[in-house]
Structures are given as structure tokens and as C-alpha cells.
Length: 109
Image (cartoon, rainbow, N blue to C red; front, side, top):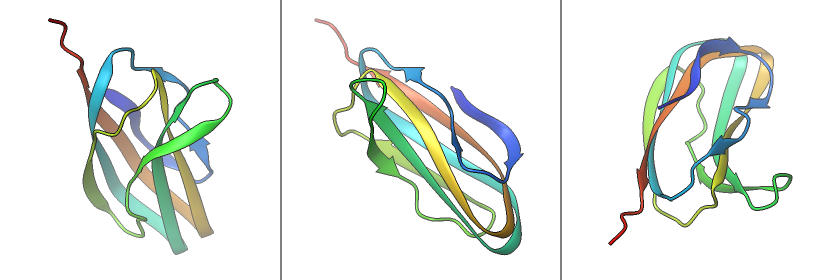
């Protein structure tokens, strides 16, 4: 499932809420195709919320400074509402990146 389309970003942001009812685990992939700026850094988090306002980090990709790809497996319990958020820092920093994930759901008996 495409969570964030490949796009060049130069400001902090988030994906907006994603419903994950019945989700048990996530396999997420961060793809960074290009980076520019002086000492650029990118931090990408997977977060959940119980109340729709306060978000909790359930997984974090390693901080990135160059083009890269990373895969995370999330098996910690999480709520039904998720999002991906990112923070970009550095003079004139921009990152072209996307995030995809696969959500495994609970099996009923």
C-alpha cells in the first residue's frame, strides 16, 4: 500500500490519518531517491493515536542524510489510526522519498 507517493519535500509533514482496523503488524519501506542541501537530515516515524490528537511513535527509520532504502517490521501493539510523519533539517535541505507498507491483519478463528 502506497502511504506517501514519491515526491520532493523540503518541509516537515505527515501523511494524514490512515485507518488500520484489525492490523497486527506492518512491514514498511522508506525509499529515498535524491537529497540536496547543506547537511540535510530526514527523520521518518510511524505513529499511532488513541484520541486523534496525540500521536505516539511506534517505529522510527534511522536518520537519513543520503539516498537510501530501509525496511522496518512493526509488531508492537498499535491502535487503529496510524500516520507517517517526517522532519527535514539542514540549509536548503530537500528529500525525494516515498513510503509503502503492508499491513497484516488479525485472523479470526
